[in-house]
Image (cartoon, rainbow, N blue to C red):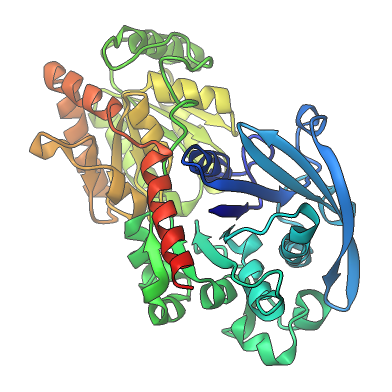
Length: 475
């Protein structure tokens, strides 16, 4: 079985979020199960030079972009046992930043068409083309309209994974002629709510649509979560499946992680205490091994539940003996709030601005609890990373948080959960976690249970392979 994994970002070449982690890890897990999986992504300016130095130029060809044709170069490398292809066009990709440009609609229309045009040039005909998020959503649509009846391409199946339904690739219909290049008879595939909607087209045309957790697969059929696409998804519910993401347990391993102050494992937790002490020292917190540290590593945006935190944090800090650490960047409203709270509670609260990977590892290792009160969370990787480092998640029961964290109130869970999107419910859950922390023997058992949870890609890869086979066997 051969699979081409199409993505707009992948570790370690280019990353803006969780998609890059998935794209860097899942194909490797598939390869370990003897699936011939290769990755294709844009050749961004932001790719580190030391990685560019290992790329090999294969060939070039031209790509139809509506009424014109554009140059595309193919570069290749092998990383972690997986072949990567990089599609080059300096006009589209020789810029700073992966997304947020005025012509993103055209950039990723070019990329999607180039992926399909590339295949004969690399002599690789996949059984499955697995696409991810709106940036690659035109691949199933283009395949359906322009390639499925071509003898060389015939028989290829397409999978489309929704990592976050909020971002759909919505543009004005004037782009049909200038950018997308869809003939009038096929435009209904992409038309929705007066716009072109790239994601809607993929939902219509892909053989299967997956999401990154089972709960998210049914949540997005509800108007509360769907960002307008619930009617489309409900009409095609038969093709939707949720498969929970995993994490790279080799990279995220407290026994070997080079970013930690000291290594530890589930059988010897002494190193976690050292990481806590060093974290307090680095962040200017009171040096106290007994006080519980509650941490967040997150984008500072509303759907991460930060309005709940903003409402309840002052009460928590006044009434409970805790320290609070947050690392992230985003909306000015939240950045300024956490800076003011740091001034109000010096030595007890630290707000770190930015995306600092090495500090995030130290926070996962040094904190005692990890807070994720999300309004929506398609999968979430942070709670799984926290478990790996023995930091107990406190989460709202939504999306992948519901699927990966079970409340420890029954004596066999791996964290603390609350259901309603309500600040007082969140605060009550945090207080239950703090009460559990002071029961030292029980907390030690909980931490060990958390660290022994299996959130590797092994389980997820097996589910994807079973789905691939099911689709291929449909003929």
